[in-house]
Length: 198
Image (cartoon, rainbow, N blue to C red; front, top):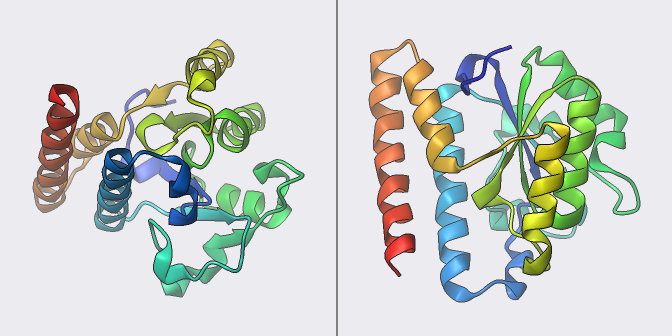
């Protein structure tokens, strides 16, 4: 099992990456989350890391999603029911297993219920599951730390987008890919520095 994030064995599960969820976030936080999703999408495309989408509301058009799937891989979009865990969708689970990529990075809305349960269940069934914490806002911010503690207790480590980009860059074999990921990592670092100084 690789400890560092490696683009060659990574895949991503995005849960409801739709801006309709933004209504409950502060305006500045909305912008940071939107930019972070854009960087994740660009990095995944560059590194050829597959992105799977668990969508609970099919009425939202794809042009409004925070990340968009590659159309030639439309099978990576799966509609899920809100009364069951995301991983209970058998087609989604089978597709992710077929990738033969052990590292699963989970993010989306909301950390304190849907996202954390998906990450825990993914770990239980054999994925090396991680939570991208800055892309997974909590609906109730007071639950955030307790949720992260629970994930840590059971072995689902949080990772920041900045760390993920750095590790993908460090593990990339191709020099052009490393340079492109370095640019995204530097952008995310600058964004992180702006956030801590605000």
